[in-house]
Image (cartoon, helix red, strand yellow):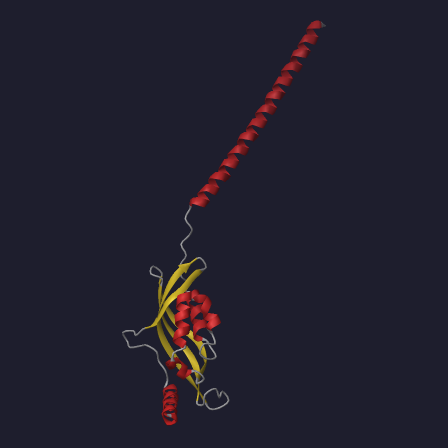
Length: 208
């Protein structure tokens, strides 16, 4: 009887020891796995922080959005708020200054409703330089500001070189110039506009 109780007690003791080892092993494994997962997350975060940001490239859509804002206007200077977000502060100031020159003012009130139509765009992404041949239409008024009077629709073409700067907010135009290609393409104005400007010059002479 005593031996049976001793054996029974021994079995219970062994069982408790095995059970304790089982729980200890399970807890240890779970703890190790948890630490490994945490370590993996930390490594992934470190790699993500140290990896350089992907290089951004100038896209055609960005160039065309600027050309559309710049070439679409009701009259000289009317579109400044629309093209300003696409330019550096320096270029915007220079453009406004250019629009204020007497030669540009000569066209004001006569050349209206200019509308961007299309453009052939060449992008050098390495230098962030763009060559663009732009097609647009515009309305020529025979009498200044008289939109209800006699008008003519003209088709115009311009070839531009645009230089871009990469900023925190994206790409901005920092220089813009009209250029002449090897085939002589530059800025094409129609005969109607030439005739109207000629008429303006004659009227100015008569008033002197």
